[in-house]
Amino acid sequence: MLRIKSLLSVISISCLAGLASEAMGQASARSGPNPADGTFRDRIEISWNPLADAWTMQVDLIVDPKAGPMSKHFQSPQDATGGPILLDALQPLPQVLWEDFLILPVPGTAGVPVTDWHEEIHTPGWEWVVPGDARFPNLFPASASLITFNGQPWPSKPVPMVPNDPSQLWVKFPPIPPGNVLDIHKALLWVGTAGNRIWGDNIDNSGVTVDESVIEVWEHPTIPEPSTAVLLCLGALPFLLNRRR
Image (cartoon, rainbow, N blue to C red; front, side, top):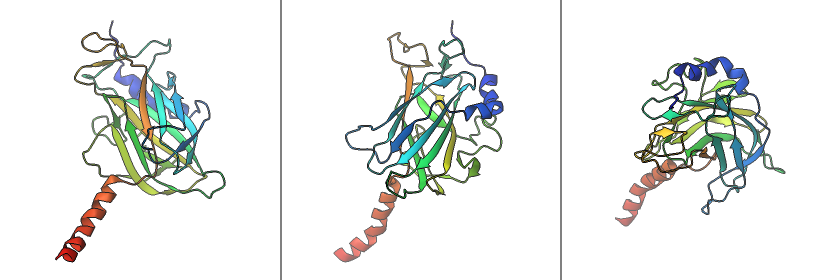
């Protein structure tokens, strides 16, 4: 029998913020620009926390320009008995994610501050929800911000992307130096695909078996932005035209 989470259980996470900050096992991850070959130095498996009704993770993040992105596998939401929680794309219910990163320098270096954050969902049918989303006004506490610096709200603004893709989250903010804690508050929302409406039953609309055990996300802070390269090219265009003339 199809069981859909109640909206009340999702909203209850605002009362469990203390639980959400609890470590799900310390880990150290390196993160940097995405390598062309798609290899990873680190992959983190993140269990669903039924008590907090959310994913919660706490890791030491080493920002290494030579490393690839950190790949994160979010376990499919489960109830207290370990059974799957079924999500219906026609009844959107965001699944809250609380992440706590202690920023560390690459050993032997002073490190670089984190000034932007990039996450890409690589499992089709999912998109991001962040604090302030008008569709879900009660999902996060009223004072919650996407980025916090040592537990305090920290201003951020989206990095323009072409085309705009809700499965990607790109933001920039004032620098957070190594030795400090960067928290990110957001949620994963199942919106489905043309061939798969329900998540968690491991079958698509036609009854074909599919793997719905994890949601894969790539994270890489502080990388060059495509929009920056475009602006540089546009800025140089008049100069090049004048030279040609």
